[in-house]
Length: 387
Image 1 (cartoon, one colour):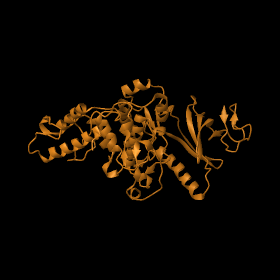
Image 2 (spheres, one colour):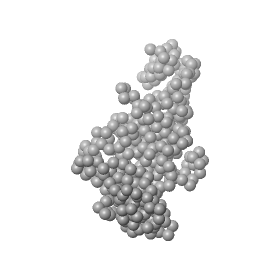
Image 3 (cartoon, one colour):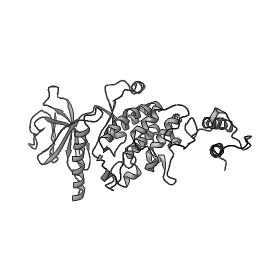
Image 4 (cartoon, helix red, strand yellow):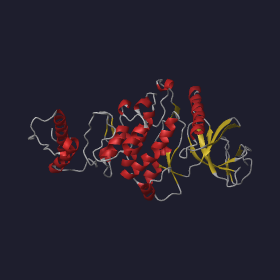
């Protein structure tokens, strides 16, 4: 079986392994070795095919990307050419990492550009979400531990991916079932693909406004303005996580009127407050308030312990209700008072519990106590629906 790569061929399927298309006469082998089998994707600027490398005895699968712009306008096509060349350069630089596809070839044939890369046999996380349902806390934690080192590698090579989303994260086949795989960790199981939108970060272009690239649901605010940062990839990975946790579109998880993430309202299963706080820090819309490097995220993940508040700046305390579950589940006044008392105990030295009610018996509280009492009372009123 061969598939003709001539875009104008009326009958591209060939049922044999000939060297030339039986319909249009075009060559069926690229560089005399890569044979397309079937199309697996098409966009405005090109087509993607599953192929085999006939130069090797095992004839392993590979992926052929054909640059074939259908958009009109010189500037649009020029940008498409730039992105296609850019993907080849990024894969050539980063393909040594086992969780990034390797570049096998990059060439021009019959006035069309081609990129051949390693085939990752698996399914992307969007497909996994559709087939297996929302992710659990454990699955998200392992996802972060698996993907953050890949981002760390990219950023160390001054590359910003700029299009991190479930569709661009592939889980390899040939491993234990999802629940077993996650339980065992399986490092290196996830592969980051599609570097067509990636960008080399230099001191010069980080301060320069460029073209806004990426998927709107997952892209960081500064990236929309054409100023992608390393922290922009961290933001997109955070959005990916909350989408996998809730199954909801990221657009539905953000209140644009108040510029507030409301993803916790849609949680399907309980989530540890430390992990939720890490995700919140990844999702900060103001870049300066967000994790700046992958190292910072990994540090908080590795220091995950009771009472640790990840992502906070020195001297800054953040009070979060614990444990975090679907906020639509009703809780009575007694339960809320108990939980808030536990939170207050965690933040006051000496571990002494204190009354949260308006009739607190504490005399001459310290400024920190007063601030905590004020914040906890606001939380109590919010949970109980008081004004």
